[in-house]
Length: 353
Image (cartoon, rainbow, N blue to C red; front, side):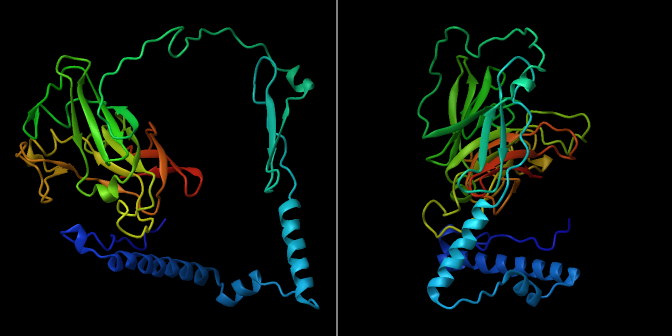
């Protein structure tokens, strides 16, 4: 893979968000179209394909006597395209032991794309008996729900931090915290584009703290999901492992909280949650993971109001409704996340670094 162009959005250079007008924001469409067309042209040139070759390959000339006959021919051609495809082979039985189960097969057909059937009796007869296993219901035979925190704004997802205290520390924005007491729960709020951090969960020191990205209109707009890298790996260099990083995704096509025309220039965003060791309480480490309202690193000013500062963002991947970290140990940084993309209607493996 070769990176041929890397740029930033047209509004990134403005100190004031409202100084970037809609006309300026829309120049992104022309910029991306130009760069993508250049990539296509280089590919066609390398393959010896000309524009005329593409036109000839995708154009069909039909000779008919009247407009009505043309419509009939087009309808028939469309019907054939929707019904001519044959089914794939039947899948293996959905069960590998016991009895029952189903099989499925598929085809590219808008009327009946998938077909299912019970596993054939001769196949079921070959399945071994299921080994007896110990199963425990998720909540047992009875459970009690206890409210531990309230006041969220359309909470969409939650995740426990793998290292409580490395974000807020014992003191942040003029408030004291107790990082060694209880767990730390992070809640993604969809309506106000922020993360609620419930510190010291379940202890007498429990408290809730809200933090957002200074550019939440872009990076956290209608946040739907949050996931931490929970896997520390000895295979990676300590200064490269992204253990404790978190990624969020948004169900939005980048309309800047309804103030501009959407341009799809957003996607899953990666953050380093450790500011105690890398920035907020020890500026000499150089990790500017939070900034104040002026965009300056919070550094040794834990009394300043601080905002998340993202490490990376995957642009052109909007409308995401779910994300999960992949605990693999093969990549150099470990920042591999799986996100559900509703624009493409599929699951996509994103590597953020």
